[in-house]
Length: 401
Image 1 (cartoon, rainbow, N blue to C red):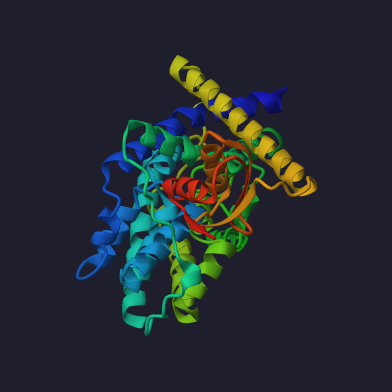
Image 2 (cartoon, rainbow, N blue to C red; image 1 turned 90 degrees about the vertical axis):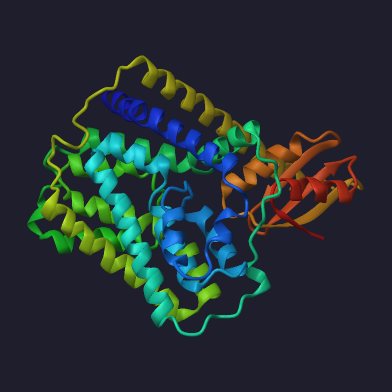
């Protein structure tokens, strides 16, 4: 019972700030011109502009890959693209608000500054030491969004942002509740005895290869701090985790080459540990600062928690139905009305779910199965191939026949 109560308390603390961040991201989506980012990322000052534009954007580790590589494809400098790829996944309006709620505004604002510093450093090192740019290959092409920018598209964008991370969100909240319940208050204080550098290196080794969402992992980091882990180590976790994972590492190597990949990883490793030590030196967070608020009983927080729970249940049911559809299509004999269309530009489960939802809403389609690997949409119904292709491209992806 205590475990369930702790999970709910974390959920209530998280929900209003996550929903507010998603709403702000929807507003950005509506009012920011589709080509604004790419138009400003070439020439003098391109690295600074790439970092300044990337820091507030609510893109996670998987979403930033096509955006950053798309910048390179459209002519942005390697330095600007790398600066964008380093700084963007570490922050975002949703991540900043959630971090402030759990670890305080000094930590949240320091994390923003840290993302900007590492982004600028990586971009400048790439510009001056990255060598000759690696030619762009067709296999790395990114999608171009063609959808209209109105109120409903902003709402859909905000919803897709939450949908893309809902699984990690649930994992993060449950893990936070487990840590709060079963780890003694001073259970992680022994990490401090090893020294800050050793602690941060251990956290770094865990974070580098894993997919860590900057927003959904904040409750985990806050629980670890509340259990005695140095706050600087939590900063390392929230910097290195979102900025690196095996998919990102592979994509950067293919698009930029080995030398720039070394610069990219070296900037994140040295920068996160160094800035983590700086944070502990100038802004140490005590145990009572992190997650000392207790249950959040404000009516608007409880309503936000219920709303977020309803949304996630809907996403879970939708994903489960998509899984059953895949199984059904795999076992059923091939119908004459079945179309298989390749899809480029999808990068995560949120992309898959969003495209499935848009195809299912189209008149004349009876069954849909969209997969990420390989990127394709299997459709049964009365629509012609050209109509299915138009639907896919209207959703912001590239159809491949």
